[in-house]
Length: 287
Ligand SMILES: [Zn+2]
Image (cartoon, rainbow, N blue to C red; front, side, top):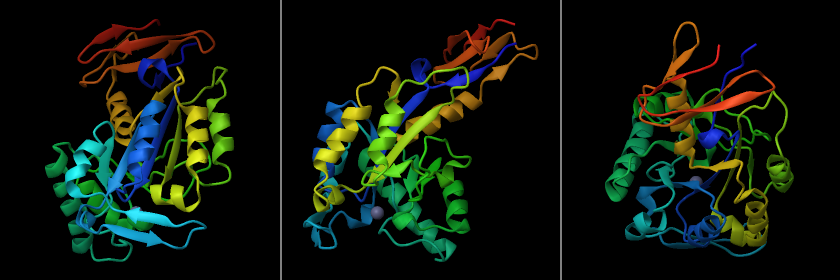
């Protein structure tokens, strides 16, 4: 009995991604740490706040500098990661009129694309705040994903990427436990694709004195052969492409009509083989 399943690049079952908000100075040491552990992430920026500068947030045990990076530093700082939309001025979107919501999103997308020369693929809802109109606006603006602030507590993929719940906040008590579980070997025939998705803000790393905790997290999940390190956008675009695979009716061939390489497993449930289908390629599969 044959069993087919799409896999992540290089035939992997696991992906790890980070998502940090507000475009802060603290993103610079975080990115240095991420690069050291070969981890990728998405940074959600408010392009209407680039001139805001320096604020110390006092609601944490330690002073937390919420210093927004200046516009001209953005392309260089985030060069190896993804920049995504977070609303032009960080306005709460829930209950706001659709045209004001559309402005918050499209103006931010426009400014970020102009600044970086890269397409904005998704967003994080500012303060996690959205309603049905926000989702409609995001869809019209061809955003492929939007992150909420509700933790799933697991490694599942969302049914709707415009309501993408992260696994956990980095400061959550369960975060390092989840990291250990995620890093443990995945065995058995019923392996599903897993995404460990962690989010936060870098001023919290100062406010809770959490830099060591972050280092611990990245030590647990970073630099592992069996994990794909990807931005939010890379995960969504890959899965979108994988959905476009076309099977011959008898299942003996599969065509990849996209411009991405796609991996899948096929064959006996307990002894599958991993196949790679190149762009515009058709490969044969065992019956
Ligand atoms: Zn924010």
